[in-house]
Amino acid sequence: MIQFVPLETVAPAEVEALLDRAFPPGRQARTAYKVRGAAAPIDSLCFAALDADGTLLGSIQCWPVALTDEAGDAHPMIMIGPVAVAPDRQRDGIGRQLFLHMVAAAETQGLDQAMMLIGDPEYYGRFFGFTAERTAGWRLPGPVERHRLLSRGDGIPALAGTLGPGTAAAPGLMA
Image (cartoon, rainbow, N blue to C red; front, side, top):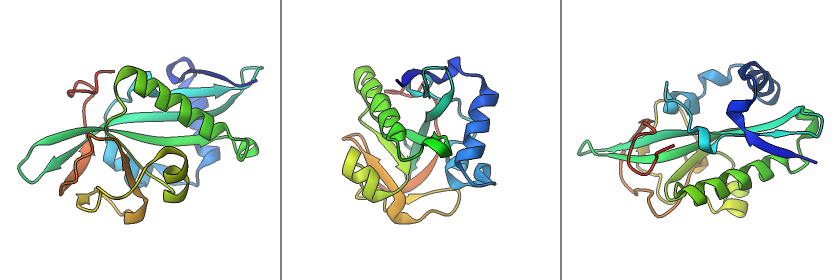
């Protein structure tokens, strides 16, 4: 049986080791890492999936980000990712369960109105309602395949602007 616990209860070295196993080398140079910058994660939306024996099977992290529009106004959002699952447990539905657990927590906290991620549009669209409909005018601090820049929620601005780190103290993102 899988148990979901706050990610902050798991040793950071364990989480980093999982991320190293789940993703190719150089993950820290990816655009997603640049978007979130040095922002602190939103702890209330970060979870770990543990096996019955306490083994870390997966993790999901969320970060405050903001789209700064052409007028200089910041539009706070939550960036989801990385979602990581131990390679030997991928395709067991753990990532989907983690995502559903996080979305339920976000809904409970009123933090589900402006969420974004960089990911597979077929998967995140089909299971979680993410689309690229509002992200066409967004600029990021690195390369991105535009069809993979996805968002969900009524609070997502369909504006041109630059996506970058936000703060958990931003309106609607109190963690």
